[in-house]
Amino acid sequence: NRVVGGSYGIYSYGVGTTSLEEGNVVSNNTVVDFYYMGIYNYYQDGMTVSQNSVTSNSTFTTMYGIYSYYSMGDIEYVGNHVYPTAGTDGFYMAMYFSQAVGNDPFDRDLIANNILIAGRQGETGTVYGLYMANADMKNIYHNTCIVLDGGVSARAVYVSGNDGCDYVNNIFAILPWDTNSTYGNGNAMYYASGALFESNNNNFYSNGGTPI
Image 1 (cartoon, rainbow, N blue to C red):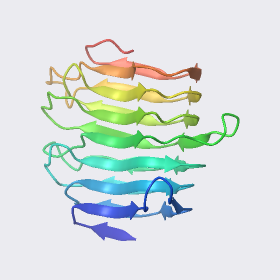
Image 2 (cartoon, rainbow, N blue to C red; image 1 turned 90 degrees about the vertical axis):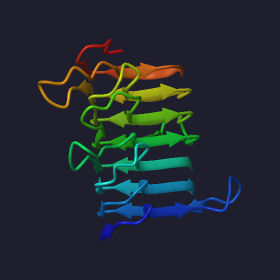
Image 3 (cartoon, rainbow, N blue to C red; image 1 turned 120 degrees about the vertical axis):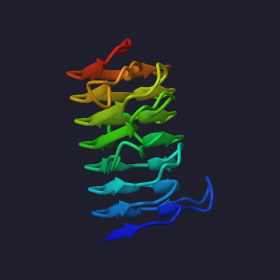
Image 4 (cartoon, rainbow, N blue to C red; image 1 turned 135 degrees about the horizontal axis):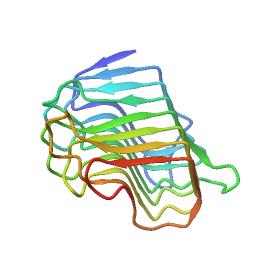
């Protein structure tokens, strides 16, 4: 499918915390030129979001690529590409998770093989490639998370309250938009809190700030 325009590109919203939508699959879509959020998921259980291309010409300063709140159960977010179309547009958060707790620490949810690019040319504020808050029991494997420009508080990946997560074979980078830029000075990874299960073979880079 090709989904064009709207405030939201693809919108999935369950009833509430005690009545979640179950087993939704959002796969193989091209989502373009939305105003606010490309793929929006709220009150979901066992959701799969895979192989989607998400981009927009919107200049809205708090634009999200893929947004997930209260996505519970056995979830998979695999092979998605979130990216800006030009220097004047860009994402505040390329991929966002909050209150997304997995079922089993030995059979964790999968966040893998995503390419997530946030920021825009000349951006001086706080932007995030991958934002995870209270998103327990996840395998975060083989992702590329990049912030272009951004201020000192920008993060390629931000982690808060995530228990029992693996971070393996990822690239987390804060980069200048071009060689003339003096921006790109945030943290490749900002780990606020959470009991780390494993971190191995990741690459962290910041153009001028502290990588971790």
